[in-house]
Image (tube, rainbow, N blue to C red; front, side):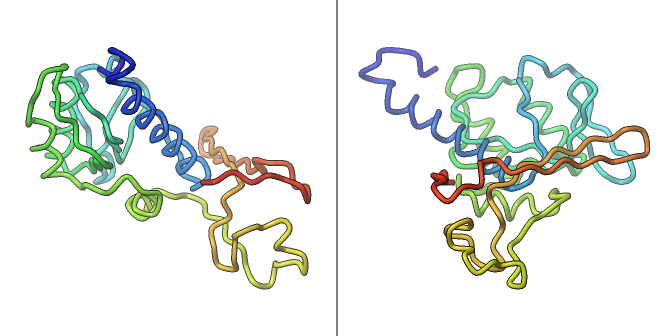
Length: 196
């Protein structure tokens, strides 16, 4: 929808790209497992409930929470699936702007669904709080772990703060769960830290 005349669409297109990039960083460095789901990949599978937990199925994957991040348009099929998931008790979280188009045409359907679901601002803290119960792993700087020269390595990270430079991956292998944790950036004195 935003690939029209550059003089009319560039600002909005760039804003959407910045939001997408921010969301990706927030999820990665917030130690939250996530996938981006393409609307075109959604079939007609109904939401299911396993162990009293509503799950939104997409192919072989199943999700407890669906975040709809500041979209302009959604497909009617997507709204139908999200509504069914919400009715079964599933968590749908709209983040930032609510889509004002359905299948590319002006519509209030997404706004109506957003009123029934959770709606948070497009902000890192709001997202981290909304998904707190989905976090399997958290890493915070402890006072006792702080080296004397910690300000060199942990710029702007204070004791008790979430460490925002680790990446992790969680995988299941049968009954076993494996977790891989790594620094995202080289730990050097002259490291230029990203703004998250």
